[in-house]
Amino acid sequence: MNLVFLRATSLLVLPAILFASRLTTPAAALPDPQRIREIAGWLPAHAAGIGQPIASRAAWEKVAADYPQLNEVIAQAVKAAAKPLERQRDDLFLEFSQNGNRERWQTAENPRRERIQTFALAECLENKGRFVAPLEQAIAAICAEKTWVLSAHDRSLRNFHGEAVEIDLGAAMMAGTLATTDYLLGDKLSPATRRLIHENLQRRIFTPYQSVINGKSRSYFWIHGINNWNAVCLDGVTTAALAELDSPAERAWYIAVAEKNLEYYFAGFTPDGYCVEGLGYWVYGFGNYALLAETIRQATGGHLDLLAQPPAAQPALFGARTEILNGIYPSIADCHPGNQPAPDLMYFLNRRFGWQLPAWSAPELKGELHNRVTMAFLPSDLPVIHAENNLGEIPWRTGFPQGGVFIFRPGPAAPVPFAACIKGGNNGVSHGHNDAGSFSVVAGHNMVICDPGGEVYTARTFGPRRYDSKVLNSFGHAVPVVGGQLQHDGSDAKAVILSTNFTEAADSITFDLRSAYSVAGLKKLERTFVYQRGKSAALTVTDNAAFAKPNTFESALITWGTVTRLNGNRLIIQDGDDTVGVDIDTQGQPCHIKQERIDEDVSNHRQPTRVGIVLDAKATAFQVTLKIQPAAGANEK
Image (tube, rainbow, N blue to C red; front, side):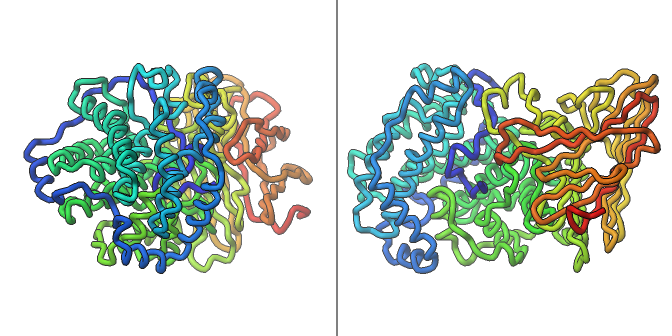
């Protein structure tokens, strides 16, 4: 399932790190009072959300004509209205605190929350009144819930039992959805419903948020968080304030707080724009940042444009720069294999930065209510941000030297569709895996040598036993097992770049991987990648290891495909219609092949296979070379 811009339409597909309700951090960075007054002077006299209220019929009729794909929302609303609203089950909410299962509650809760945005958008498009009653019923049900915090973020059950009222991803997104609904529908909603929305936003969002920001309550970790939580939560809360609070000074305070604290989000990127959390969380986090930036830009009449600020320039390029080949993107970190950048986000960024990329020339209008309305009502005269970009390198390669990730492509008019993604970096980043020195290979339209992506989230995923998982630890990645040891986690476990050489004919890079392994007497562990372009396209991976005394060594490949061993040390790996051959050179040292299915609950529900290349005898030195090339077919000899 693809991730959608900007907020998740499903709580199931976009969970993030566990919400540590008792985790305290320093108080939020408070804005200068003069800055608040300045912003207040740019704001309209009364609260206003994004887009146009339902009463602006000419505007909504134009949207319906311009985007006929929105008709599907009306069809979805008709189906939803015909079904009874399922009650929220406390027993499902409690499961996470009891056994770590978050799926059953999320599967039941998603449709309840989605009904609000579906009915609201359908009513705005149609304006016949038939979706108002089911919309008000859904709003009343959500406002009656014990907490808007997701079950996986309330393991202590403090929010469930009413001991705390905190803000997590779920609460922040719900705030944005309800406030946007109130703004769009206006007096089409009953006074009682509008009062219910306002009272719940005040109790569940505005009051606790103000208390935290002003240092009167324990701070939320995401205020200073260097991951997607920071951008997503600040977006939801600020969007709600702009659409709901009538005082310009109050709205200005929320904007100023967001402006001051969003800087922490960009600390989760390396300076060259690499998102360590992976593509899916870039869509989620940066997507919410971009949506909030546009909301604030319009609210302030263009005076404050967060997207145009320098810290956003390189992160904005991440989605455009990371395609490996033929629509396949890295599945590094807790990604869902098959993820691509969300079309609406890329359309928006394409226009704002003037990239003129044909693939992103039109929006799809998917995602949550606020996103669809924002995209549908984007002004035709969006200002272009003139920032330095690195898109010209794409036919050949993309390099994130500080992030440690390199994508090698075949170049323009390439005779062979064959590319590679090399993962360096370190094992201590948000949503990261123990994968320093791993790699993926795309041949044709399949990632034949793969990174398996993330697992289905449970309590283990973000607990002390995270790396018991064979898809999160290094067993599930194409990296060596050294002296019988897997890689350890932490930022000190890293792939240190020793050398690089990039030309039109070939690209090469060498990593020192010693720090990733806690192996006594490991004197040397260097991994060299050589990517060859042209008719003889190939990726050669060479490991050189040395020990103070004889030890063991094992290399590995990961695939979703089928593996056949031919004569000698040659493998054929086939995935779909695409095949690679792998020639193994151990410098004469005997080895055997050990295949093992990685039996974890993976996020794409396609079990990967680990192909171990195991050297039979201990030695003080090893050199193992894997030469991977496109092959004609699975029966190649």
